[in-house]
Amino acid sequence: MPSLSISPSVPAKAPLLAFSPLTDSHGREITDLRISITDRCNYRCVYCRTGNEGAQYSELPMADYLRLARIFVGLGIEKVRLTGGEPLLRKGLIELIRELAKLRTPLSGNPLDLAVTTNGHLLEDQAARLKAAGLSRITVSMDAVDAETFARITRVPDSFEKVQRGIKAAQKAGLGPVKVNCVVLRGFNDDQIVPFVRFSREHGVIVRFIEFMPLEEDRLWTPGTVVPFSEVVARLEQFRPLVKLPANSSGETAVRYTFDDGLGEIGVIAPVSRAFCGQCSRIRLTSDGKIRTCLFSQFDHDLYGVMQRGGADAELAAFIEKTVSQKEARHHIGEPGFLKPSRSMVHIGG
Image 1 (spheres, rainbow, N blue to C red):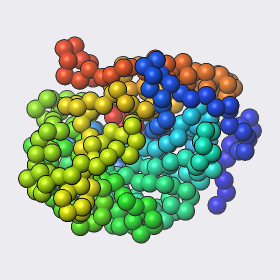
Image 2 (cartoon, one colour):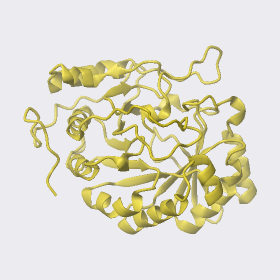
Image 3 (cartoon, rainbow, N blue to C red):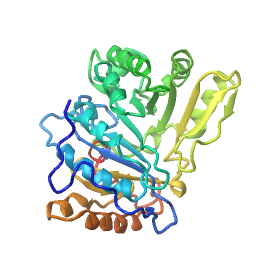
C-alpha cells in the first residue's frame, strides 16, 4: 500500500525541527498529544451525543495531521494518541499510522508511543493492520459488560458482540494489554463496576473507570451523576482487597490497582473529585486543527489557520509554543461560575 501523500512543500523525509521541549508557564513539560482525526462517530452515547442526525462534521486531510504531528514531535512530544469521534471510520488511518511510526523523539531517538482510542465496533477487521502499521497500543471505550446495558448507553443495537471480537482481535494482533475505558454514570451503569473487575481478570485487559465529566452535548451532567473516586475504590475493595500499583509516569491520569492475588489491573481516573491538573502533560488537536490546552478550556487556538495562510514549519512551531505557554493551571469543575467548555467531548477529541 502506498505511503500517505504529503504536500510538495513538506517532503515525507524532511528533518525534524531543532529540539526545544514544550513547557507551559506552570513548569509542566508537555509530552502527550491527542489528535482527533474526525468528529464523526457511529455511536450516540448518552453521555456524549444528543442522538440527533444531520450534524456537521470537520476533518482535515490526513497529510495535514501528519505535518502538524511532525512539528509537535520536533518540539518534544513523545506520545501521540489518535482519537475522534471514532478514528476507525477515517480512510487513510493505516497509512497515517505507518508514517507516524517512522518519527523519532528528538531527545532519545526512540519511536513514538503511538496509540488509538476506539469504540471497538470496527476493530475486529482492522486490528492486525493497525499493529503491522506500527501502532503501539489501543484503548477501547466500552461502558458495560452486558449487551442490554451497552445498547442502552450507546443507542446502537447489536454492537456489543462486535466490540468483544474486536478486543480479542487486538490481543491476537499483539496490541495487548488492551485498555478498556468505562465512563461511570450513576443510574446508568454504576452496577457494572464489579462485573468489569471480573472481565479484567478473565480476559487479561486493563479496565479504567472514568468519572463522568460535563462535556456532553445534552445537559445530562450534574454532580449527582458522578460516581466519585472514593466510591469506586470502596466497591472494588468489597470485591477483593486492593493493592496500589506505582504510576507508569509522572503525568499518568489513572490511579492503578491490582488485587491481593495479583490478578487483573484496574485504574480509576477522577478528574472531578481528585483533579490531577498539577501533573498534566497533555495537549489536544481537534479534528479541524485547533489546539485545546485543556478539556475545559473556553478557547480554541487555530493552528490550522496558520497553515492555511501559508505558515512555514517554524511559524507553526512558534504558534504551538506560544499556545502551550498559555495552558491553564487547572479546571474549575464544581466551583461557582464554572462554565462548560466551548465544545463537547466529541468535538474536542477523546
